[in-house]
Amino acid sequence: MLLIIVALFVFYKPQKEFDKKVTFSYKEKRPYGAYICYNSLKTFYKTNDIKVEKQAPEGWMSFDSVYTDRTLLFILAKQFNPSEYELNKLFDFVSKGNYVFISSLTFNETSQKFFEFQNNSLFEETNNYDTASKKVILKSPFYVSKDSVFINQGFSNNTYFETYDTARFSVLSTNEIGKPNFLRAKVNNGAFCISTNPFLFANYFILNDNNRSYYQKTLSAIPDSVKHIVWDDYYMYRKEDYDDKKEGSLLRVLFQYDSFSWAFWLAIILFGLYLIIYIKRNQRFVNKVESNKNDSLYFAQTIGRLYFEKGDHTNLARKMSAYFSEHIRSKYLINTSNLNNEFIEKLSAKSGYEIEFTRELVQSINNIANQESISQNQLNEYYLLLQKFYKHTT
Image (cartoon, rainbow, N blue to C red; front, side, top):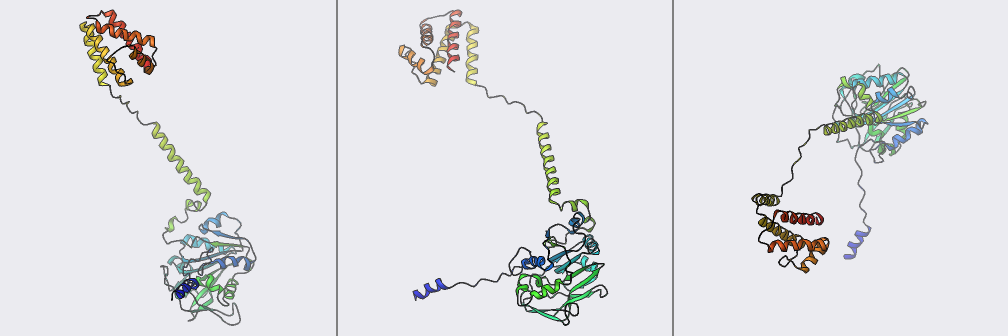
């Protein structure tokens, strides 16, 4: 039994789960990406001039003189949410001999009104896609002498055009119940091709059975004389949150260019830094905060002045000696009970004060301690000796 369990662990390989994520991204090789569709365009139209555009059409159309004629704009998206301004730009683009291919799950009201069609799925993005096999039928006589039927075994979108301008559009493809899902409208020397089922251009559909033929025949609605291909990545993420009145503003167009965006925001940042530096340099001065006073030293100085004013020189000198002894004990940790030669040598060694001067100072302290009274001159000499010591040892 144990051997069976071990064998199951060793030889059992779980089946890889089918990736159902829908992106329609030209980079994605997963089933519902558009990697094959994007890379096959170059082969079908025999051109290497293919470019991915992330900006609004009016941006690159207005500023890039290359795309004047025989350019294909390929739009594959879940939602097609253009503004009226953008649609007018697309119409002008097609009028000059270019082509726009649009395949989207939904079309907003603005686009339906502009193209004068109505499809049976409005506004919201569909997340629960059809999984049943759906037929798609290419109509004759545009492609072939008789209708061609293809089977979509994966996700599908059964949206179709309920109404459309029959004088303006030709039906190139229908679903299994005969409802049109792919229309073409000529505009001068160019054309609009509009599909309601982008799943037919995903990797999964194109690689299934003979469905690559559907992809190739669909593209033949656009002449093979195309010189430039623009793969649109703008409508892939375009939400219906715009204001038509602002769509044509100059800044909106300029912001489509990375160089302008970088320059604009760099200018804003530099201006902000200038304001910060200017405010910092012009702020009012902060008053200097006085450091805390040494109250004990101030007290000692006050007592000293009182003794001096009274003429009690002896008592003042002894107070100065007491302060000196306390200073020596706390700073140099030397016992001051006996001011002898040993004390003099220790104090000179620890303080770095010359031994001759140290000896002179200690002798003065001992003399004052033994005198009953001292004169003002003696007090002055004693004070100078102490100050000389403090000055050279601090």
